Image (tube, rainbow, N blue to C red):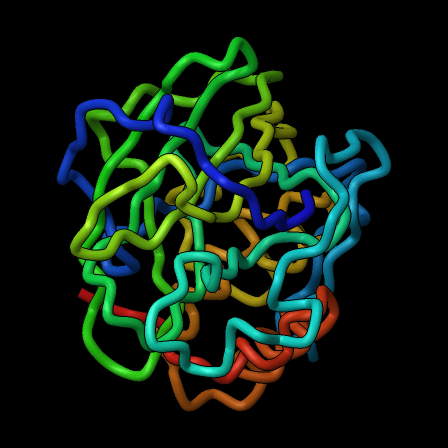
Length: 257
């Protein structure tokens, strides 16, 4: 799933909801896809989590985002609604096994106070949207989970997500933003019940081996939250983002409630 800067038309504007879940309310990891019991990893076997992009599924857009073309979005702009960088694979459709996954997006220091988030289905029908307050500070990675009252993603369906920074003038027809795709796939029985398990680097690597980006990210984010000074967890987070061209974001804080 590529990150693309685009102008978002007014057709995205519809009733805004204020329901949002942050890292503290992240969904537990759902079931990951793997091929055999041999892919289960032994405790202590992980030095750094890696991601194996799935072989199927091409992104609808292949242009890189602004953060990968000179890193202009990391230069602390006064206000630029184009400078929103989603933490997604570089050139593959992002997969999830969760009904309501968590999205991660880097927002730099900005005078905007809200982030607009929307999902559309394959028929271009609105699935969910909300306005999310932006925490004050020097810029951070925001974690946005679909809340319990949002419609669940359907297995086998691809959805188009959109993020836009909103200033005091509100959303406009020429408001630039970022868009990309997320596809929900069916979980494999190998990790059935993992939604009740504590997050571990081994679990994150199982998701990475299966090409399940969103639950891999959520597992690592939970680990960073619970053990912020663990060097192995930090190295896994940093190395993973560097592997998809987001090394400058890897050191940014994650916004917590």
